[in-house]
Length: 131
Image (cartoon, rainbow, N blue to C red):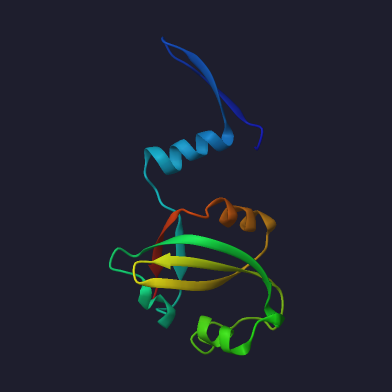
């Protein structure tokens, strides 16, 4: 699907759009859809998210869970509300919200997921909390 090209004919012109450009046009520009980051719990760290329920992704860092301090994992998961495995490759996503910065850990697999988030650094995300 990466090499998909679409030819558009109109009375004025003919042009070719590659798949990524088409995706960007359809999903981000024409419909103004923002990417979404979802949480299964209203974590304390999310108190920095404003009433607009949005945040800008400002960093994606690869981490090995076993190397993270217990205190950080406790902060990130509200003392274990979300159970993390003891080890594994994860992404530390860093978001800037209306009232501050918050981190969140996400699995770094499949590798397309890492690329997805790295491509969205600088983008404004909807923050969804499912209680």
